[in-house]
Image (cartoon, rainbow, N blue to C red; front, top):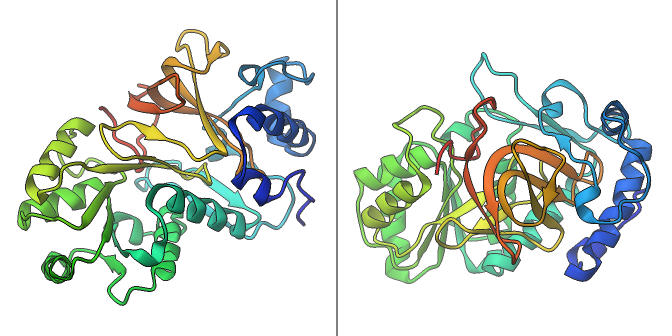
Length: 328
């Protein structure tokens, strides 16, 4: 059963910066009424359910709850997304009531950063994600491939020879290519087939997962840029527990779509939240309407005055994640 939500997608899509807090506050009150896990956590910390005066006063749910509880509003969810991990890891599950909301979120976000999908040939180099089920990243790229409609759009596992031949063909045609890949696979491909790509945008989504020596994001981008002959490497910041993504066009600086905002807290005082500075990243994703929109991550980063941010690493106590580099 799905409860009527207090907002519609069009409100999120057209959200303006000066009304973000108003809408976030509205959703906060709705989620505290209907999300039992969020409500229990707020009560356990003796946080009053009164109306926050600022966005920094909204409580953030620790992301670890997605590993131990069903963070969900309503019953009989449509599906779930599951984080990557080894067989020994406890993975996160994000139960999804409405897949169309996720589709609207990543499709609109793509258009904001890259334009119409049909202008691109979209290629996914995501072997580790394709080898398991319930990946939100695979679902997103698969859907974008369909929206692209290009006959050569698709996924590649380890057939680097075929991928290289395809890229060469598309380069000769001057076709724009959106190549999104997990870091270790992009490195393997770039080292096997160094070349000069002029019409291809390369997007890394992290995910070394112990496959290779850990690299900083700057080191990774330098290696890929030199091997593939592109000026900049783009990055995607997403995770199982979110239904939205942020993208970095250069220098590892991420920007969010209008319905997503990143805050930061002091490592020594997790309730001291601010809109800029260094510390633990806290994310407001208003597309998470049926789970929880206010997530305290285990990523360390820096948030700038304009709302953009960098990921600087991971908390020492946090588990490895497939969707971000451990160090930057």
